[in-house]
Length: 247
Image 1 (cartoon, rainbow, N blue to C red):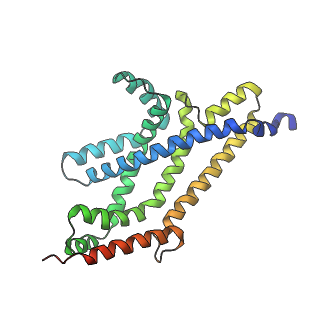
Image 2 (image 1 turned 30 degrees about the vertical axis):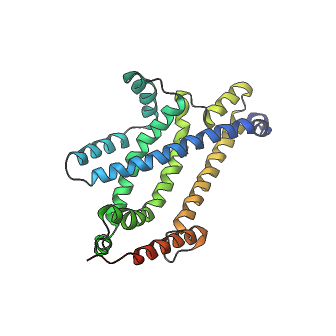
Image 3 (image 1 turned 120 degrees about the vertical axis):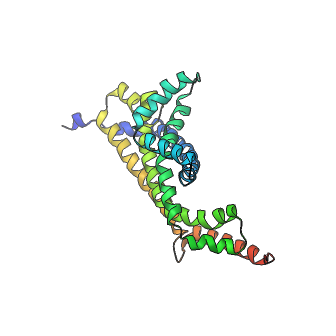
């Protein structure tokens, strides 16, 4: 029975390769999340704008929320690359895949967060003489971010897990690396058990990171991050009060 389960020492023997695969997965996730956050915010603002932009954003969001990650990866790497005559690297195709998918989900998260900000707060900013863009970046966006942070953390965890799908296009992330190792020594159980544990640990780490960020927006605020944010807020308030009152 023990022989069938394999030897877990093989995990330690190939720890460098597994960590390299994990590093590739996290690199793809970090780049994709940054791009998806920007694209998601743009889509959310388009969705809230009356006219054709709203319909375009609605169509994009519903199309990509309905596409599986596997299908999207194959479409980007083999279909889109051929259609526009661009030879994507596996890393580029992976980033495009995850960004396209998660921008759709983040757009709805941002839209609901922006709508949850009380209208009176925006009007208060306008009453202080702020322009529309400044009201958005100084009043609306910080409050919407507070609401959206927990859901962004969940999206980040999902993105890390979806990097495992990218093995289909040859990305040497954690799963592909493990498959290559298994093809040599056939130690299926210990190696795939190890990457399962790695994904769980990463999920806990990402959750802890976003909870740390979230504590900076709690009322009353607490923690190291919150002290930095409060210091920044106090400086902004001081600058605002130092400005001459508008007539």
